[in-house]
Length: 271
Image (tube, rainbow, N blue to C red; front, side):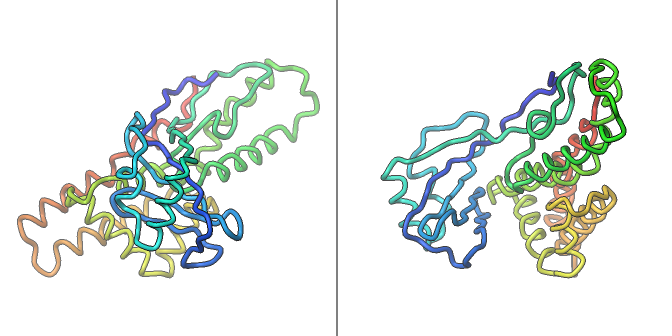
């Protein structure tokens, strides 16, 4: 039923840290350094920690892989969790929405379309699919004619594109930028630009959060924030006096911003 090729850009390595409290109660703790790690409470005494390991194949789990970018306050708890060997792994999959219409069956959520888990957008997109499918089926009085209903629902992939567009694109782009090494000057500047852009607050931070959470499904808003962030990054490099080195980095920044630009074009394709 699904026609898209599945890409595995990385794996999530999960552990449970015991008897440890995060610096901010009831908040997720993002570590964006050499790679990506997310820690969040699952009980009053337990913290789940997910570490992103880039690459299509998972290397052997070792202390070097899982602790090279852990902050000091998490290091000891992380080592203890590794020693207990209670480690779980999960591939992060990317699959654009594309399916063959099949009478009597219908794909929604992750079975139709997957994006990297860095933004936690899978449930948001899945629930949005449910709402859209409900609205499409609501006018129908007879659901027994599978072939005609299948034909009627061919527009689903196109209609879901606005709600999935921003979440899919941002998840892919953020993972590409933050999973890279700081040895790449362009990506290092993009990381700094992202944090500095959010620190502007107001429409800048609120707008990005609305896109990531699915509250704003307007594709033009995503375009605005992408160009605004790019302009902020390039301006920071070239002002007050541009240098040849900074001009080269600025040129590479433009390419980095569109590494995953193919997602909006493949999303919503019908076969």
